[in-house]
Image (tube, rainbow, N blue to C red; front, side, top):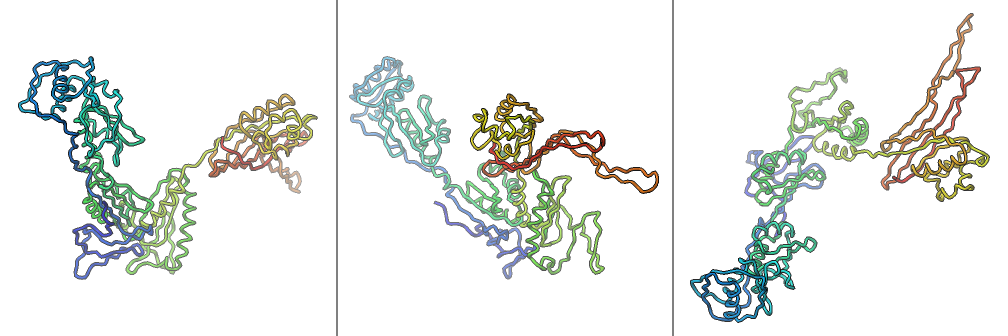
Length: 618
């Protein structure tokens, strides 16, 4: 049974520190009157100012018991009869069975002719009927045979014993086992059947049967009464409440991240595969609570671990630290802009107190090496002393400002964060939510030009619904295309977006009615919420302005701009939580018609549309 929650520090420690809190980046420690401060003592009742709701360590002490003593297996019903002295010298096994079962125990039996062998046995004292029957089972095992209990008993080969229509019985340490070969079912309560099988294999006889039922979490055992007794007793020793023996501690951290604390404790206690405490202590960081979960096979280790957590959970400086966070997926500038907006509002709400410094401290402004230094009222801000820039396990130590500063390093795609340890953990939690792998969308498009004939004079949509192609189209859609897109296309040329097989079917059908020209069939891979642009064509020069001076013989000055023509397609997909994709499609097909009189003023024929469609993935 687990003990009540232990809210205090380690037992048997004299703690001189009553409590401490964190205020404006400074740790204020209050000592008991008449006691000296000793940082190596385990601190009791310490408060956690991280705001995660977990203020004190939680310790659940286990029983430290992983095996239990099991009484020996009870014997079966006593057999009637006096003792007997056995003396066989190279006797036939059939005669030995007849002497023991038929002549001495008066038990009816059936002997399988396939059982052959010889026996040499001599006892120095009389054996009870129970001992004689157990001795016979041993002799049969030595000759590859088994004694199956029943009415009558049967002597068969060991291979045939499990097939003699035996009904399994439920076996445990309190149930007596009659003599003879039997099949029992051993249900397990705490340990898995696969794990128990590994524990029983060294104790199982070569001729015994051991099967695992994973779904029911039980073992099927077959063997003699002595063999089964050994296995059942072994099961009783190891089938104990393993979790009840485990001790669990949850320790909140105020200055160090759980991952860093776990690495340091691993080095101290040697919990790796080759360490002395391998398997006895396990650490698991809980970032949600900024705490370290400790699971130990021995409850005494929780107290030692708590001592070292208290010693290590300290900041190298009393103020803010400079951290460098390397991003994996997002852009440093984008994430920095988002975080700056969040924490700028928070810092602005602090009012004028954010500009104050603690008594006995001086303000320090952090600037880049090339930035000009400005001052107010003629005072020059002091530079950062060299000692303040020393490296620590957490970062570079600077002055204790309450504001969070985040700068994007676009070259290395990293963020420079100036914050206190609690604020830094909050920033990292936000970064982990923002720095995610973006989704990608594969877009297969077909851009075609169709010559409108008399049958298509009212548009392609009307042609699709009134002509022979109606069977190709699904109700309400045009092969996955918005009907509004095609119904509005009444000029020569249109765009088709949909699944590859659907688009090909319609184009093949149209090719039988009129001329179809495939302009482009691009495959575009684009990130979510990003715009993919496809442009196939030429830049055509156009005169946009002509200027000539009023002076005599003045030259004519033309202003020329280049205009993109050809196939231009822009697609911006947005993937929502349901898996559907909203695509903003903008497509243009433009051609240049030369102007013989003005070569630099051609006519540009355009066919364009802009629309938003919703499609499903695939």
